[in-house]
Structure formats: structure tokens, C-alpha cells
Amino acid sequence: ASINRIYGFYDECKRRYNIKMWKKFQDVFNVLPFAAIVDEKIFCIHAGLSPDLNTPDQIKRIMRPTDVPDAGLLCDLLWSDPEADIAGWAENDRGVSYTFGADVVSKFLVKHDFDLIVRAHQ
Image 1 (cartoon, one colour):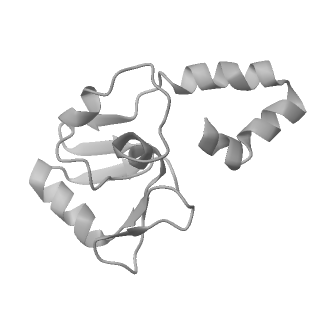
Image 2: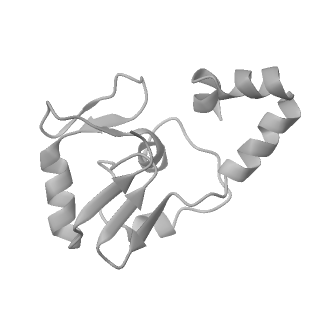
Image 3: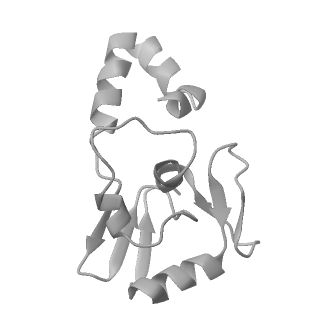
């Protein structure tokens, strides 16, 4: 909730509707899926990978509904970004989560026998 306040969603809801509507959206966001695996080969994720993500089964164990923390696995799944010009992990310019290089993507794909990562952010 604090992150989508920073990025303007709260203000947009307040301007167009009211704070109660923003709270209703938070209730919905707190139960939306974070990830999906399609045909055992395509890893779909809201934002990106996390240095704390060792296996996709970790995502299944996140209790729902939940508030999104400002750091850690869940935060990263929702806010991390790929970065073409780095190797490994780096701090994200957004001020939350990380950026990750193509090497991180390749290792993740090979380790879990995926062909592709599809993300909602871009």
C-alpha cells in the first residue's frame, strides 16, 4: 500500500473517487496472484525475480491475503526490474527492490527448466 501511494495510485483514486475506493483496491491487490507457471515452461510474474527466490514453490507458501512489505521476497516479486547493463543484482532506481542482469535470468531459467519469463511491468 505504501508503494502505490508513492507512485500516485492513492492520489489518482482520491481525485477520481475517494479514499474508500483506494482501500477497496488494496483489498483486491492483497489477494491477486503474484505469479503463474504456464505449461511448466513459462514463468509469469508481476515484476521480476528476487535474490531470495530459490524455488517457485516459495511463492505458493506466501500467506494470503497479505500486505506487501517494503523489502524481501514479496516486494521483489512486485517491484524488481531487469537491467541490460548489469550483471547480478543492483539497487533499483525506484528506491525499492532490485534490478537484475541477464545472467540472473539465465540461471533462473536453467535451474527451473523454464523457457521464458513473462512480466507485467514493461
